Image (cartoon, one colour):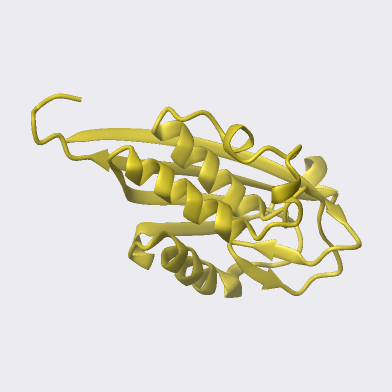
Length: 165
């Protein structure tokens, strides 16, 4: 068995126009996030962590923001495609540990639904997805409520039946 770890980080600035999407669900808030897609910063972070663990570059390489086909795309589609990429390479998810950094909105009540939605998209057990929310104690761009940051660490596993890989 081969075990690999990946780390993802992403940020998006607030924008008064769009809806706020985090972890595949719409969150009531006065502003959404700027981005080429739906700007779901948590899903983008998870995609980067998965791709990095599999040594497959990053989300921008596979789903460039210069491609019209990804304009306003639902990030759950990008996550499903990322899972296909890593599974085609022989990997399966072990677990995800993710943190969202935002002063507002408060996210605690939405985390179970995020876990369920992500698990459904990824075809994994919701217990394999840990999501935490924190503030930055009013420090930095997230503290000034200019945007949201997200971090994720993932573990992926590859069965090596022939002893190689």
